Amino acid sequence: MKENSASALIVARPGPLRDGLHALMTAMPQIGNTYNADDILSAVNMTAEHCPVLVLMDAGPNGSDARMAVWQIKVRCPQAQCVFLANDVQQRQEAEAAGADAALLKGASTEKLVATIVGLLPRPIV
Image 1: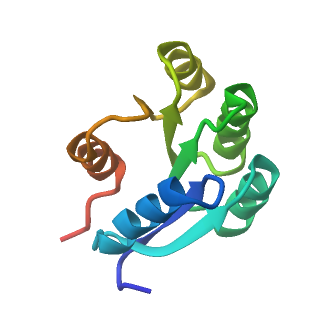
Image 2 (image 1 turned 135 degrees about the vertical axis):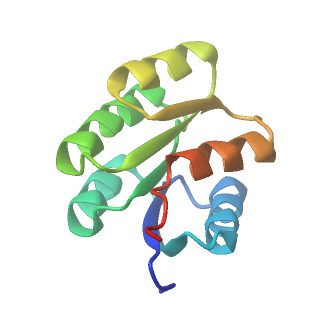
Image 3 (image 1 turned 180 degrees about the vertical axis):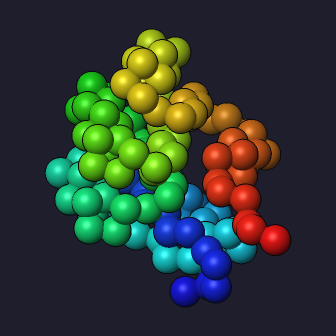
């Protein structure tokens, strides 16, 4: 693990999206351990165990379950910063209402995703 770094949890089914998010987290010096959860139940359990600073969550095919997970994650680990990747504007709004710290539409630019994540991560103490 990188010294003075935070952990991240990626909630997405195995595949290109999760692989890309994992590569992004690995490249960020602020992120140490990156955990992967295939489903919402696993995500909630892993949050309770690891209490990551950052949770990246794909809406998946059933966005309502993912929105419930945002709420459950925030209850278990209030300091976790949740970034929700929504399929549409309605899902984005519902994720924000559920407590997501940021909600982006899938297809947002990499620059916007990185800026959002960096803006949510804790600043190092100097």
